Structures are given as C-alpha cells and as structure tokens.
Length: 116
Image 1 (cartoon, rainbow, N blue to C red):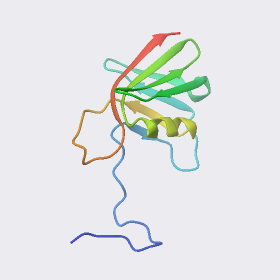
Image 2: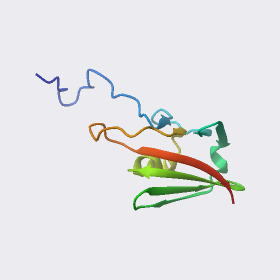
Image 3: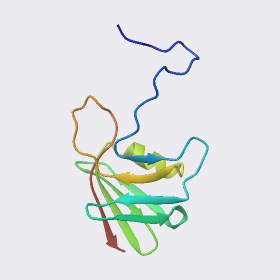
C-alpha cells in the first residue's frame, strides 16, 4: 500500500536530498558555489561564474566559465545542474556514483577545473 499525498497538501515525507550536490532554499540565491573534486574542494563566488554551456551526447558535458578557469562537468541528465545554475541556486556540485535507474536525476561522473 503506497502513501500518496492528498491534492493541495504537502507530502508526508520530504524528498531525499540530491546525491549530486546542494541547492539553496527556494527563493534564495547562492553566493558561493563549491565544486568537490577527487582531491579537494574549490569554491567560487557565484558572481564569478560568467557562462555555462550544456552539450548533450554521451557523456553530456557542462562547461562553466569562471574568471580565468573552466569547470568541466561530465555525466548524464545534467539539465537539473544547468537549471540550478540558471536560477542561481547551486551551492555545491559533487560526483555521484552510478546508481540503478530507480533514482532519477543527474549522474555526475567527473568534475575538472582547467585554465581558460
């Protein structure tokens, strides 16, 4: 028996947090964006992220241009990450391990930071 919320009422259980990162609460903008690399965390002021380009394919690639660096994100279903950038809600992005398709959402395989 499934527990389904009634129309117009909040769900009984909040959705689980995304495995690929953290978002600012609804209506708030992130002032800093952190990128979790394999060996370190790198933070940028959100205002330093100038441009991003989402290239579909296998793998999908999201290129984010910062002041003098380019952040390259590889994975699948990265549209949610791009939307978080568009809405200025992305606080942290990290790689998440491949999971069965039962859990929807982005799969971030790799994040690299390169000189521009």
